[in-house]
Length: 353
Image (cartoon, rainbow, N blue to C red):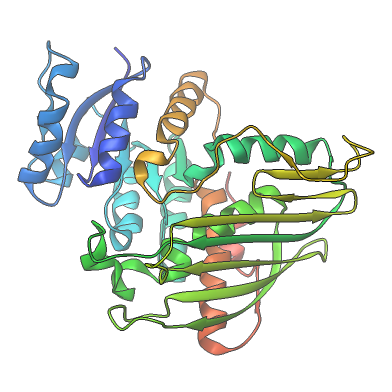
């Protein structure tokens, strides 16, 4: 029997996690907790046949889930505004944690969650992963490998765009339109672009941003663009737009280097192909869908379970995830204030593993 897992939440993402857990031999799905027992029961019913010898539990509350000694891992996929508070409760209960993005939606939540983790870490070893799930996408893994081999030389320009038009039919539409629940367009979705900019290029030094609200059904700017200056003084840009209901989901990736360039799944490299005169298309799928069924949750969960069994940390852990969120929060703040924001002011994260 693998490590016991409970899922907190019963939306579309929770079903993807349940599928991943039930296919992993190192994990055992124990039960589900949601804001209503009806929604938790529907998820449990779908996976009731997965372990005929043991009934899956429908917890009456999140507290009951955390008190269950069979549960060693909590997968937390509630609405954004609940992530930090419920993650802190899971850590305090000594549970390992798979935390959906964004882990926090404010600076205050960031400091509070980190302080909880730091305090718990002095008492016991807890493993965490923040679900910036695109890090497990085949194209992103291929690009990371190519960059490690320096096939486009020194990268001096990095650009990532998250364009996901949120239609009224979107499952999270009732709450994602409110800043107090979602955090903002760069926080709720654009954090994927920020995280990949850091993952593929490196640490950000400073941001400056602008924003625009195209639609009236959201109470915050729905399109945000941020200019980046990285620690090595190279530059870049990230954008997030929730406005594009008239065109498909799009995640753009552009990297310009001294020896070539990358545009999505297209490569131009004087290192690999000295006589190249046109783009080479990489044989990888592209992250071109906002559907959660398109995202590599299974790869994330499988890597987490193996890391847990081997006693090795996995990236992005909570610290890495919060570093990406600092940039997303800074872009949001810069767009609001019209001022450049320095990154790295959160000194409380410097100490602790």
